[in-house]
View 1: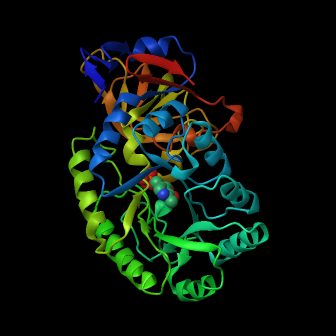
View 2: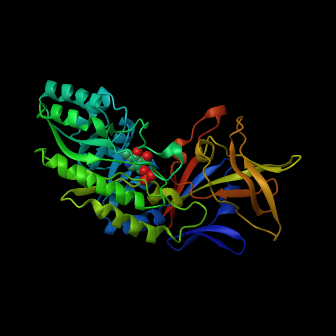
Length: 398
Ligand SMILES: Cc1ncc(COP(=O)(O)O)c(C=O)c1O
């Protein structure tokens, strides 16, 4: 890890340079993100052993410098909106490396995908396929499509990030597949090239990916036998990281994940769409302690960053390690670490024991590189946090 704790303080090292995080924080009055892009490139290298072609799910973090690290590592991209598609293309991804996922792609989105002749459109409903059929029929174009399926697999993760339960809005329900397939036979301009799935996010127990891969392999064989030009299985993303620690288990788990994905037992070429795993550990959110406020039964560490900068704790009770940038003595205290936003859910951590804090100290909220800055918003007229990044010994701001 390039964020290191030495002599009582947190640093970031890159290309022979060392940045003292507290010094950086003192120069910046507002909360800010800091990305260690060398670590993203290291994680990208670990995907050299992936059992398929990798398309980074840029919803996790769409910082341009980070995107360019992953593009240079040979990755394609998975986008879920026209905005993401345009940004990916502007960052130099070839349209032939773009997968367009998303449950609500409208006519404008689909038109743009067709105009750019992107690699694959992942349709999530019969209705979306019908819209695509109308568009392609009117222009005489053909389109390579995938059907994202809801295979009814409850992933072992927080319910707000499960995406393949029976009630989920994502994907085409498996029970509708026969009807859709017989309709597709009447639409020769839509070429069914892939079946896709994404069962959820932040999954640590990789055995569910094996079940998923087996099921998708079965479906691939069935559908292929019906004379569709199927070539690929898009197995989505979802591999998690252990937010409670700094990641010793990540790489062994990644190998187990690759093995689990390989269980499909079919001639399909695999596509992977990792997001979080690649980028979560690369980012910290740095904030200042505004007050340490005494309550009756607890004390609050009130930060100048809140749920507008990092929504994950408020959105799904997510755990993030929080550490003071400089530790002076050995005393420890227990705090509710909260933000300044006028919402009771603006809490980063309850009853968290950590080195003693004082007003004016700075803290780092770790593992904030995924689903952090991309979800930041301006509620309470909060300014968006700046995003700084370090790569090969060079620091830049967005
Ligand atoms: C279709 C699709 N692919 C990939 C991902 C990336 O997931 P993760 O960041 O958990 O790897 C997501 C995230 O929700 C997704 O919806």
